[in-house]
Image 1 (cartoon, one colour):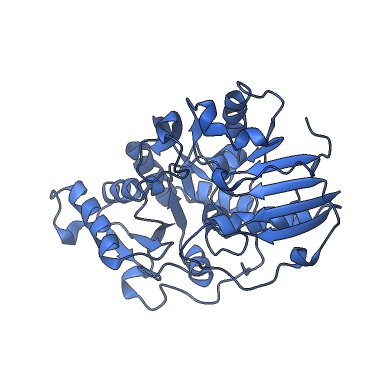
Image 2 (spheres, rainbow, N blue to C red):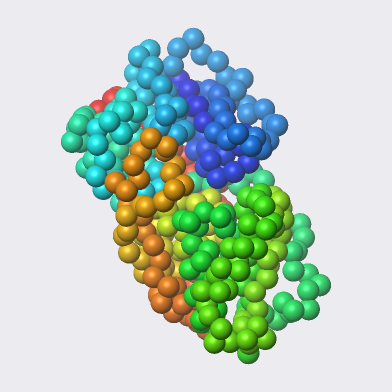
Length: 374
């Protein structure tokens, strides 16, 4: 079959990383795959490589796969099947037909987990029961992820010597990032006497004052029951306001002992997948797609609860996001898990051994496509 894949695989962000992973998994099949890039950001940060699939041309295509935001999806009547991948981060709750216009143009929709598959299908079938919804497993592009880090972010820092390193990588300015919960759980789990540290790195470029304000708000939320000398060690590392590049992420995965990522999103996150592959046994919400696929064998799960997605940061501007749900971490559960991670070396070692197999799994993962439309 001839497949045309359209996605933001040249972007250096989460959309780009996931797009490249899906494209590579398609290329490992027997299908002929042609790729065309699109860009989903005004602040264009992209890689300049020429994807080999861009040089594959066919007179006609059997399947069109689009990985993008819903408003950018097009209907092509010249292909036998239209597949949409929308990086779905929330569970549908009450979504009107008018907000599903683009989804209803598809023959098939791909999502990150069986939980999302069920929720999206139950919503879509109210309007078109012939649309198939498919859950795809975690995929990761490991092309630029070496087996070992080329350097260290913490070497030579005497404050961090012989400490257990928790670390957070994310967009601190996003409500859904889970940074506040991470900070509060850490500050209330440990004292200055514990040989631990929490390192925080901003995944994306941002205003340094904004980042400092977020950290200041979290510190204020802990309260004044401790003076600054009694707090457990916390540091901001990496590019900080300038964001992190891949080399810094890999270094932090290898320097750290446990990534903390209680993101509200249901979808998989490539940085969590990276951390697991580098055997840092990440902490995630139990409602997250990565936990749904892998569970306690590879990850530490935090109890979370479904909550209405009430946010100004809407992923799709025209959609009323209060009709969707996401998972918010329970801070008390996150606190308990962080203590368990620190104390329970036996469980850590079991997860490390399980995660040692992930590089091979990612390297060989492929995504086959059925030709017949449902």
